Length: 460
Ligand SMILES: Cc1cc2nc3c(=O)[nH]c(=O)nc-3n(C[C@H](O)[C@H](O)[C@H](O)COP(=O)(O)OP(=O)(O)OC[C@H]3O[C@@H](n4cnc5c(N)ncnc54)[C@H](O)[C@@H]3O)c2cc1C
Image 1 (cartoon, rainbow, N blue to C red):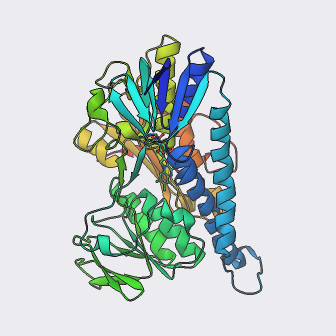
Image 2: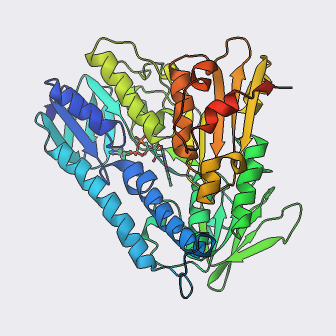
Image 3: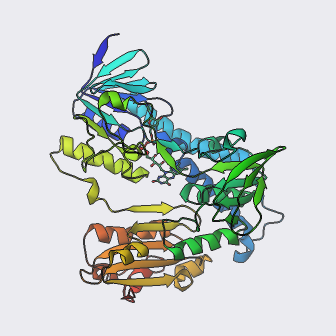
């Protein structure tokens, strides 16, 4: 087998690989790009883009059902055409995928290989019958849904975020196992489409990484729409019941089992690092399979970098893309950008959404530092009242000594956008007073952020 030599090999076309390949090729390097399945990876095909397209369909149904609240009369019940929901989602996701693919195939200095990449040695990768060599290799292989070792799981048909993409019908009763981001987004969306939905969570509350007040409010929003929530489900097991599936819940209270027509497993992600030949490359992984990297995303093997979800430093599109920015800037622009310069930020796309940045209140308390807290219910936000969407609240934590913002949560209408004025103030390393004195536009949700910052109290 002959070896083709490149200046760089990029494995995976997730949220870091394509931009990095384009940047390296643009700098005159000969680049090989390897993708084993769908161009664009998780976000484009089975993650952010298709789910947010479906969330939009679900919201349209929800608003239509609430039409009366706004004086809109819809004669007859609101129902879904699930084939159209899927077709709309496929069109949005598909055009993104073909955009990435044609971008990669059109790169001058770039060569695309389709197939499973596997290291043969630290500087050699095999794809099918081809062997590719390069001094620089970039791993952007992402992750996939965890299939938990719950009793009976191997004897039932189940869905994951990937197979959910093929659903063009309305499940009668969708059992969602996992009360975190992926599970809650699918759960609320299918409830709004018209399914009965039960969310089963092992822990004592939904979105267990968030503060308790956030978990409680999120649960209230979902239960308010008729979703059944079962927490403390410590012993989840499955059994086929005719065409249905019974999930044993064994919770501290409530029925011991839930019978549904479909089961979605949404209990976490694992990195795609088990079939990559990392041992042959001398690339270390941690106990959970994540590739160990330093602050500039170099692996334990010289000349090999790991970017995106597979390095365990982030689990989002924006963190993967930022990994690309870090590696490109350090390699090509002589900079020293680092992962630890990044501030934690993400959204939960239920409706209303949760925007989050920096530390939680619980983390601030644990840190023991003197801090200030501000909180405002969405019922006291004019724009939310005008829109008829007053669920949720916003809160912010400030360091009492430095006056820097430590973190924030905005659960409410436009929370996914409003969070950025707080995030940007944090990146600017400005005191909270800068934002407090900013004159925001009326009427917006954002205009109440300065007001909230003007009413800070000591965190007791
Ligand atoms: C349901 C869901 C919703 C989400 N929603 C959001 C959201 O709203 N916002 C957000 O920021 N994040 C969201 N995420 C997370 C987001 O999708 C990922 O963080 C993002 O895609 C970054 O992934 P990545 O760049 O690490 O790689 P990925 O996008 O996972 O891509 C990796 C690519 O590598 C390929 N590959 C893997 N192994 C090999 C190999 N050996 N050889 C060749 N190719 C290989 C894969 O086929 C894939 O195309 C969501 C995830 C899910 C599951």
